Length: 383
Image 1: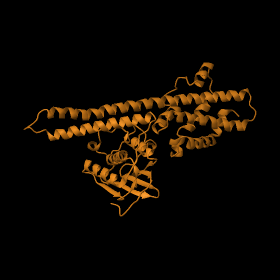
Image 2: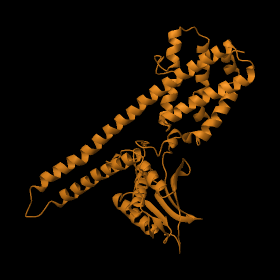
Image 3: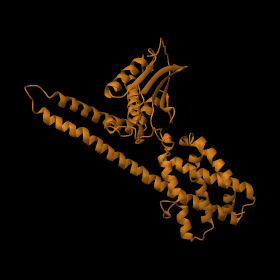
Image 4: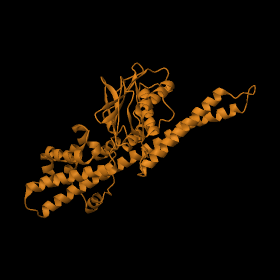
C-alpha cells in the first residue's frame, strides 16, 4: 500500500495517536477541545497525501525538504493552522513539536503495516517528509507574521495610551504656572498626579514583562501578614475608583499567612479592575476570600459576555486583550496594555499558587487564585 493511500484510509487512528501526544507534551493543548486541538490536522494530512502523488522536479523536492519552497498561499490549511496556533498561545517550539509528532505517528503506524523496507518505501517516506516540512514552513511563516503584528499592535497601543496622560500632564503644568490668588489649581494638581500614576503603572508593567522575558520572573518577598486586611484595602480602593459600579465583598476577617503584600495588592487590583471593565454594569463585581483546606482562595466574579472559548487558552498570555462590548469607554483605563492578567499570573506563581478562569453565560466569569497556607487562621463571619 502506498503511504498516501494509507494516510487517507487511517486518518482517525493517526489523529488519535497524535492528539494523545499533544495533550501530554504541549501545555496549551491540555484544556483544548478535540475540535480545537485537531484544528486542520485532517485537512493537512490529506493535502500532503495529494501532493505525494503529484509530479515534482528534484529542485522542487529539495526546496520542500529544507523548508525553502515558496509558500503556496497564505490560505493553505497549514498556513491557517499556524495563525490559529499563535492565537491560542502555542510557541514556535510547540508548533514544531506538533508536526514532528504528526510525522512520527504516520510513519510508526505505516511501518507496522508494511513489513519489508525497499527503495519504493524509502521514496514514499521521503515524499511524505517533504510534505511535512513544507507544511511546517508555511505554518511557521504565518505564525511569525502574526506574532510580529501583535508586537506592532502593542507598540501602537503603548504610544496611544502614553499620549493621553502625557497630554494631560502637559496641560496641567501650563495651568499650574498661572497661580490664582496665591493658591495652586487643585484640579490641575489632581489630574497631574493621576497622569503621573498612569504613566508609572505602564512603565512598571513593561519592566515586569521584560523581567519575565529575560527569565528572571517577578520577584516576590513574602512576609507574615493578614491577607484579609489587604483584600479589604484593595477592594475599597477599587470602590473609590468606580463610584457608579456596584461591588460586593465576602472576605473572611482574619487570614494570616506569608505573602508579598505589594505584589498581592497588584494581583487584586488587576483582577478587580479587569472585572469592572469587562463586566455588565447591571450585575455586581464580587470579591470572595476564604480558606479551603490548606489554601487561601481569592475569587473575583463578574457577569457579562462570556470569554470566547478560543480566548480561554490565551487569557493570561502577555499582550492579549479580550474585548467586551459590555465595557463603557469612559471606564477603560489608559494603561490597557494587555499585561495585567499576565503579571497577576506571574505573581501568583511566585507565591507557588495557581490562578484559573471559568466563564459562562449563566455563572459569569470567575478568576480564582489559590495560595498555599504556611499558617492561617480564620475567625468569625465573612463580611
